Length: 233
Ligand code: IPE
Ligand code: IPE
Ligand code: MG
Image (cartoon, rainbow, N blue to C red; front, side, top):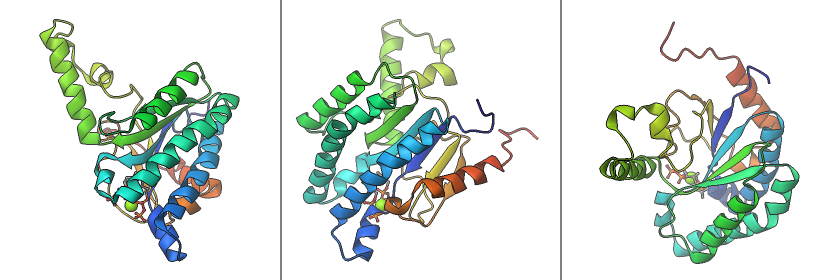
C-alpha cells in the first residue's frame, strides 16, 4: 500500500445548482449531472487505493430548501441506490450511510437499509454517503448514546477517549486525511466535524458536476506534496 495515499478522502459535493443555472437549466438537472459525476469519481478514487470515500449528499440543513428540490433529491438518491447496487457489488464496494433517520421518507429508509445490507460483506473500499447528515448532530447523537451506556453501566467514563468516542458516531471511520470542497465556497458547512480534526483541506472553484477524475488527481498530487505535522515539528 502506497504510504502517500490518503486512507480517507471526503468531498463536499457543492455547486450543482450553480452549474445548472449557468447553463439556463433547472437546479434539478445539476443534481442529476452531479450524481453521474459521483458514480465515476467514486470508482476512480477507490480504485486508486483510497480505503474510504465520504461524500456529503444532503445536510440536515438542506431541508430548508423548497419541497420540490428536497423531493427531487430524495427521489434521485433512492434511484441511485437501486440502480448502482450491481455496480457496487461488481467493484466490491461497501456502502455506508451516515445521518439521522428521522425526517427521511419510508422509501428512502428502505433503500438505505437495502444497499447497506447487500454490500456489507464487500471489502474493496468504503463509500460513506452522508444523508440528512450534520456534524454537530452526529456529536450530539453520540453523546446521547454515551450517556445511555454510562447510565446502564456499559461504559466507564475513564474509558472514554478518541477511539471509544468514535465508536458512538454514525459509523466508526478513520480520521479524514483529505477534504475537498468544490464550487469555491471556503467553509465546512457542518460536515464531519469530529473526523476532520487534522485533515488537509483542498478547495477548487469547479462546480461538482465538472469535478472529474483528472481534477481529483490534481488534488491528490497537491495533498501528496504537503507535510503533515499533527502538532509536532
Ligand atoms: C450541492 O449543490 C448539492 C446539495 C447540497 C444537495 P448545491 O445544490 O448546494 O448547489 P449550489 O451551491 O446551490 O450551486
Ligand atoms: C453543503 O452544501 C451540503 C452538501 C454538499 C450536501 P450547501 O450548499 O448546503 O452549503 P452552504 O449552505 O453553502 O453552506
Ligand atoms: Mg451549495
